[in-house]
Amino acid sequence: MNFISQTFAVTMLNLRTIPQRLGSSGVAIVGIAGVVIVLVSVLSIAQGFSAAMEQTGSESRALVMRSGADSEMTSGLSAPEIDIIKQAPGLRRDGQAGVASAELYVIIDIPKIGTNSPANVPMRGVEPMAPTVRDEFSIVQGRMFQFGTNEVVVGRGAVANFQGLSVGSTIHSGQDTWQVVGMFETDGSIAETEIWCDSRVLQGAYRRGNTYQTLLARLDSSQSFDTFRDWLTANPQVNVQVRRETEYYAQQSRALSTLIRTVGFGIAALMGIGAVFGAILTMYTAVSTRSREIATLRALGFNTTSVVVSVLTESIALAAIGGAIGGVLAYVAFNGYQTSTMNFSTFSQVAFAFQVTPRLLGMGLTYALLMGLIGGLFPALRAARLPIPSALREL
Image (tube, rainbow, N blue to C red; front, side, top):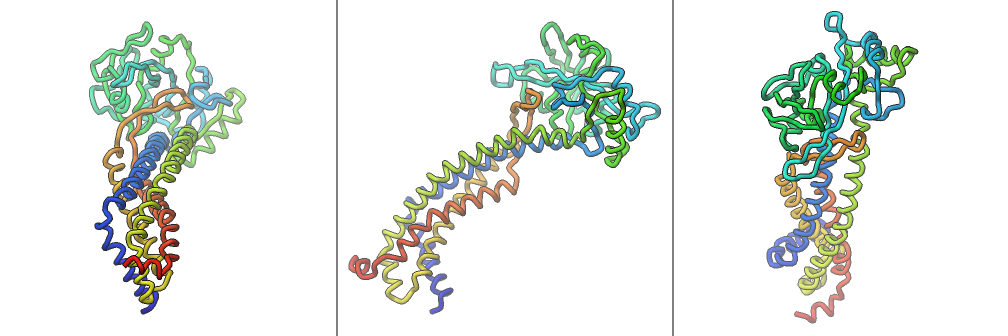
């Protein structure tokens, strides 16, 4: 009997006897499934947050901020600078007007739904050209606010996560009152966490004078970026930096996504150690209860390597079952779950949905198989080293 047929025969024998050891096998399956659930669910937070940030950007849009600013909160632009920026070549034109929106960004306190603790919700003052700049913007309920009034429109994500933002409600912030007249969406981007209003009205409410923080520009094309940037950075009348919108939001998401992934892998590693020990105990039990069968097979001429491979295969099979169960449960429980978290670059909330992607499921299954391989290695070696005479005496 050749090696392949021996290995196949012993492996199938091991797999067919798994139901007879369902109790001990279940411990390994449940442990590994738990690790996969934790790993996939935590990583789906980072995946969802990154997706929300990255969906905000467009290669054909540029964000102009004060030179040296690392976020909208630390930027500042004067009205004369805004006028000069809107004359830059490479900017798309609508008639004589540049397709650009000078914007103001402030934070207001609104409690999260289900809690009484206040959250930092971003409020963005925009110009009438803002919906044209962001062509993904659409009103899905109510209407657009009227410029020159205290009316606002609220993003779908903000309505789902924070109290009192439904259409028809009133927002109180300090001595200011704002009327919610519409809800908008922007294809799931970070903007859906925001409240939009007239930038001029917001300037007066927060005593900002005739100043802004950023300007979002729509370019003739993505290839026009260098022309637009070089003209502005070489112009001595303005002191600005120009970044692609995609680059800006990718950089903002990097720190928190890295932190979440680090924590996720750390927790999964610690839980994985426990799952590996569970797999080791399970396979040691399987080897112990089947020592007579193993010794008999070896006495009949089955080689040691076939025995090792069969035990490892059983361990990996149990891990695959646990990994598949964990992946399915993580997908059902967390995919699409809506929540919000702090964007540490602007200290404001970002609403997003967990995303359990095929890549994360594959990563979870791979981790499960690795735990199964490690958990079955030592029991497999023990099975191969069982003294045949002493094991046969147990018959």
